[in-house]
Image 1 (cartoon, helix red, strand yellow):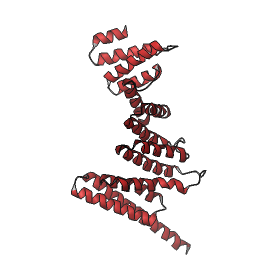
Image 2 (tube, one colour):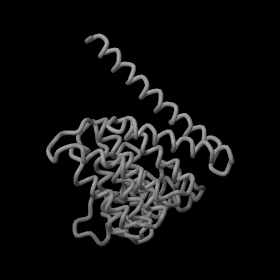
Image 3 (cartoon, one colour):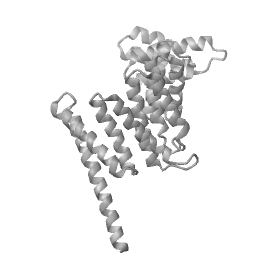
Image 4 (cartoon, helix red, strand yellow):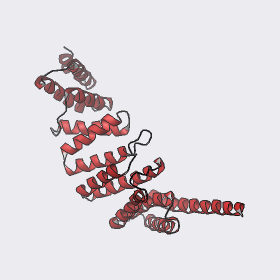
Length: 276
């Protein structure tokens, strides 16, 4: 009887996995065809229906919650944004199955972060910026352990929040979030995107950044091959040095960077002046 129970559980898990994989395959088939293709639309509808059936039958499993994210993405492709938001909320609701101080497994946090990210991005696309930012802040406040080493799913949500802040035109908030991303994960895409936003804000006069960080952002832009933007930021670093109470030693590196960028752009006279 024990063996029979174990076999039954194994078969049920295999059935769950098979249903999830079928729905997932339908979704990615639709994505390959595109929403403007009649067959793509049909496959999106079939995928949403399949994920809905998965939720009804296996609603308490992690795969079913993960399926809600893909279900929401299918609804979004179909233009059914309210249904898409509801699906994201169903995924995010996974956090409510845990007590206030109950630890969540990293795999659970990852799924909730994914659902939160998709919801923030859709709300941003719908120009519901305040709702997008509130969604991010709720995750950061209530999902314990998201910022733990080896997990760091809060970075995904912070990135989405920063994009919402930029789209809203809130340069002060975007500047703060970008600095968090750069500080927390300087060698990843999160830090690189944070520096890119800081650079854009600084170039547009929308952020107050010290010489050291301006130099770092300018160096990042130069490494990407955007020498013009790097020079703009480096010149702002020069200006920041001139107005600083205690100018740092970065000014030499700033002029070296300007000279290097001018040289790569073929502006040899400008490079010579910078090097001097």
